[in-house]
Each structure stands twice: as C-alpha cells, then as structure tokens.
Image (cartoon, rainbow, N blue to C red; front, side, top):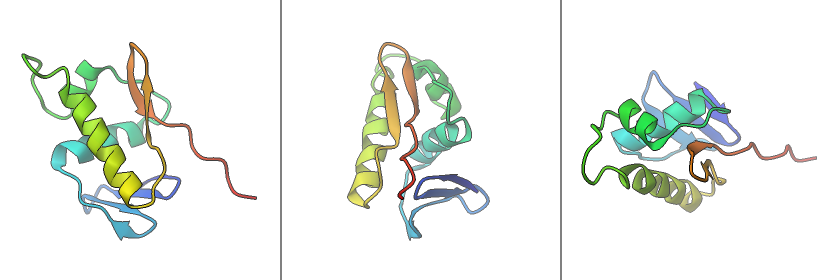
Length: 103
C-alpha cells in the first residue's frame, strides 16, 4: 500500500482511494501515479514515464503524458483530493510536495 496525504494506492488490489473513496483510473493513469508514489522525490522525464506505462515513443506521444497527468489531477480534484502531480519545467513530473499536517 502506497500512501500520500489522503491518497492510498493498494497495489495488490490495483485500487486507488481518496479518504476511503475508490477512484476509477485507467491502467495507464494508475501506472503513472504508481510510478510517482513509489518515488516521491524523483523527477521523471516524459520519456521515462512513457516507458514505465508501456507506451512506445513516436509521433504524437509527446502530449500523452500531459494528458494523463491532467486527467489524474482532475479525477483527484473532483473527489476532494489535493494537487498531486508537480510539473518541473523543462524536466518532467514528480509527486507534489506533501501537504503540511494540520495542527
């Protein structure tokens, strides 16, 4: 089980939840988010993400990662979750900095 703030990914059940509410992700969205949650401080280039989610580099693939990141963000926001994917300009993507604990 991978956890980040209110997000929980259960790898054995291939499920993703926000505060115990199951969120449906496509397989590629799941793999993308899993990669980031398993490596919370690491920045991944678009090519590294494409390779991890099983997409061959070619024509039209430059925006696939951006589209998946956008859809993941939208699904998480729609279900009350925080901003989870940070864009590192001219480099790639990483898991966003965790939210500060409430006092």
